[in-house]
Each structure stands twice: as C-alpha cells, then as structure tokens.
Length: 66
Image (cartoon, rainbow, N blue to C red; front, side):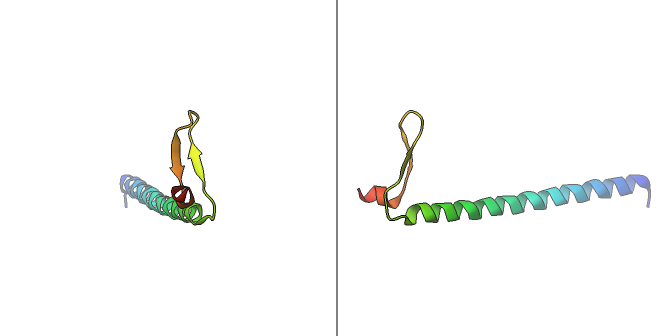
C-alpha cells in the first residue's frame, strides 16, 4: 500500500472515529437532559427559574399546579 493511500485511510479512520464520538456524546447529553427533566418535574414542590431580568425561563409541574 502506498503512503498516500495509508494517509487517506488514516484520515478516513480519524473522521469516522470523530463522528462516532460525536454521536455517542450527543446520546449521552440527551439521556442526561431527560434524567434532569424527569427529576425536575417529579419534585414534590414548585420550582421556577428566571433569567437575570426576572423573566420565567422554566418551571416544573408543581409550579403549574400553583
């Protein structure tokens, strides 16, 4: 195999490895986000988060019931 082909294969392998890593990272983030959301919404108290201006950004089921 020529050096050029080896370099090309090496670059292809690196790109594939990077793509696989990105997909796995994204899946991990989605799982973590789903878990955080489930915990947030299953709390037995109301929770409301605002930005620096006081505008509500997120609230849980307990806050909806208020």
